[in-house]
Length: 153
Image (cartoon, rainbow, N blue to C red):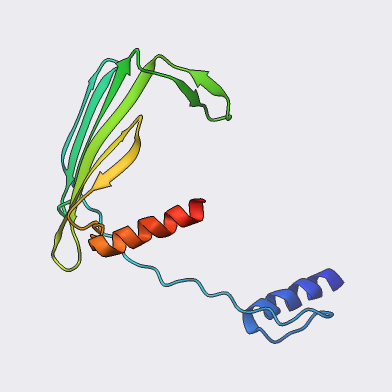
């Protein structure tokens, strides 16, 4: 009976946030986030072309205007050492090259398009919405070069 009373006090503490047990601070009440209705977005086009173990192409479009394309190419004879899921280096005779793109319309109505490549040189992505480097005026670039040369000495 005592354990039931303790459980009842604990439950009351969770909901009322006013009961103290021993030296514990009040337990705050927990409120769930309101449920939101999720609208399903259909896939209106889908293709996945697999050509053996060396090449595949994927393309799909959704009902809300998202478009995704990706291709994978395994080039034999250009491989190296790769880390597997356990962290062990494993030799491979293939180099994997992936390329792709995606596009969607942002909430402001602007079309966002991104092209990307992942290969032996790492991952690179480009799009008109990406920040572009700022050109440094020649006199600033020269002063920067001189300052770096002094530090290197």
